[in-house]
Image (cartoon, rainbow over all chains, first blue to last red; front, side, top):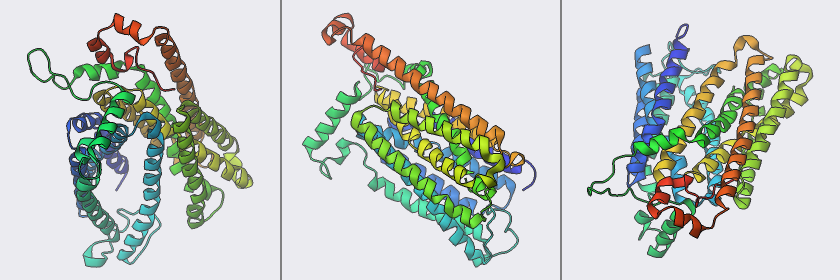
Length: 245
Length: 200
């Protein structure tokens, strides 16, 4: 890659990632079974990752990174939202901390894994992987860095399939499987009581279900706490980037 | 961090290994502070103290990075402090936001909007650490420092605003509020309903 190519490839991921976080969560909130939506997301980005292993040119790289950003956008806000749906307010923060620690640990682990897979190439370079090794074919005529994407992508696809069964949807869906009717009722009531406001969208005077609420979009857009919290969030994001360098 | 450690004069493999202890400290501090915050159901102090530690850490790095080779211990310490400060902020901020949004739809849209805007900060982060400014990174460390400070101000502002609204809502009893607003109106107001108590 030359000149600004690297930055362009980077931005190709970030643009859909930022743009689709909100629409994706609106979609998620409409699903009765969030595990289906989350499972589909993971399946999609796992497949895209495998495709990244066979890209042949810069255009292909940009296209795969665009779709990677598109499908990954929904995961983080979705996961946070689902934690909030299951746990009462005084139990959420610890669960979120566990979630972040798990993702940090997997980040550390993936570095090791990538280093190990890259050795399938025969030559291991400590430099960031892509495009420096393009010239020396490894196992199956694929360079080591390609195998990273192909193998980790395959693992992601398998985990995506598992999500359909492993991610609990809602107390109602868990009844009879790992919750009793009473337990589910407790969780439902607890959610309404501690988090306030009804569960389902109302039916308006004409008997039609109210559409997805532009009103709520407006409420959020006008809500000062969102912007202040976003600044608190950024006070983590910016310094954190420096620490990762 | 590997770059900071390399600037201290360590080989890149050793630098890679030396990143483990600060990360471990960060993870422990995130878990412990979250456990405590849930227990006392008060989130602001843990976020704010994290931001304060960040400010201290980046101030040390900002001041000493030029002669990093002669300040190895101090800078390595600062890196630990930064990790201990930075990791509790996200779980705290996410939990605080989601607890103060009423109704599943507003929660879904609100949390995504917040993360989306916050992530734009991450994009800023990717531009401010420039290779040519190594090892001092005045733009990088300076911007990080000011973002931490601005975040601290925002956390205090939120706390004060929530506290004020709760106080105002507490001036009337539930019956008195219900006499003023109908059930449907209260539902529609969501977290702006006088019966909603903001989490501090």
